[in-house]
Image (cartoon, rainbow over all chains, first blue to last red; front, side, top):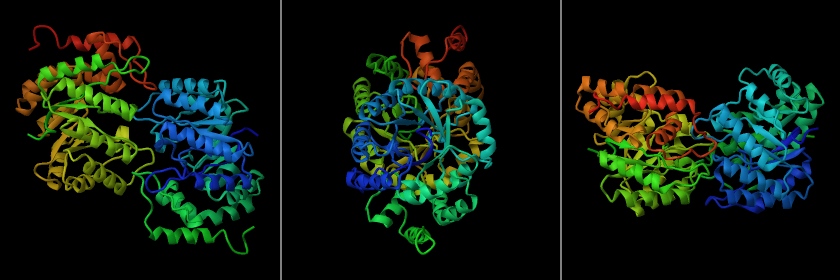
Length: 300
Length: 300
């Protein structure tokens, strides 16, 4: 399987209410992920606040993770930045620090053209030299990749995968067939948007880039294994346990819910970096109720 | 007139092809703006690449501008940042450095809620203490201000103005009436989107936040004066001279066109910071043709 296939678990980058990194919490989250045995860790993704951290903070977080993982789980690191020189710097640094792969989103302020995004990816991929996954996340980057642009990028030496948002029409089978017809056989196509993971994997997607696996990696592994083995009934049963959590993800955004989830699970006392704000206390009861679905006799 | 009324001229922050600041070019652009006599300079707006510069670079650019302006023209400075603490830091620094006003866009990565944007603005406005203009630019920030949110923000002590994008339906009169009905009488409502300046000002907008005035300030002043005096025929004649330039702005984005325009006007040799790329050479002929409309016997 490709470095970018299977379950990739995206940890938060824990910060306290003053915005300071809490390395001990990050280390604990990473250790739990490793023990669950996913196919990779997706450090400093959107869930890991990469867009809000300084270049220096990001390089430090990478080193904390390398120390914890000790090569036990492959490490993919988000290197997106508004400036090409910053993203290229992070790509080189990731290679030096010992990461296995890169995840690159076309962060935007001025709306970028296809040609600008192509050149940006070419430059950054060459700088890092590591296998690189295109991070297609229009909701945060304000840029949408056409199939044609993904095809052109997949021809570049080390651009090996794409992380897709859920298709608006829900047609995973059709989208996968189209993308496979224009990319190399070795090119990996995975999805983010946790509530669509079941359908994406059952439709034959290569991987699930999972937010929830940053905190509930064992449960996410169960879902991934069942779906990738095409055990449809088992997959549905496991996915149902996640349903109350998926509802919260859709209502408040998975990023905000993850902070509250971490605090309810472990009492971490972490907060998102402002301007993003913690969810109000009344949501905590719903999170506790959602977590209860994973407990009790039916939980394996 | 409010600090934010009339013509605000937005200079580029000139950089060379390696991404280094070219202070001499910035100084020359600023001097030309001052001589044309606009109502303010809009430093480090979207046109001034604020989103792509480091905090340190931005503080330096502000000091270069303060030195050039010597108080001859009021200075408004863009302080938007993805993090609230960075924006607050820039707001405090702007007050210390001697700027007259602030321009704050809700830069986003995670899609922000209304409540988050309200808290962000409240914190940053209080940190700076200077008159502040809400920068409503959904195309770059991925956040759209409702009239209700503008109304709530206008109640805060030093939030004194809004910079609006062109209304999708072109109804300036209706939008201005609605906004005026929910904001204090002293609250200033101006527009960006240069090709809509004529209609905005003729409809009674308080100001024009102008990209083109960063390089052609005298021509932009003519248009502003004619429109604010409600000289409809004169306004139309002046606006027609701009038409070929407006067409290029709409086709390529005003940000990219401005770099090419600076190079055609003055031979500056500047380039946008990557990933944004210079326009292809074939556009230069169209820019020269657009500039020719401002020359010749009909030019006053």
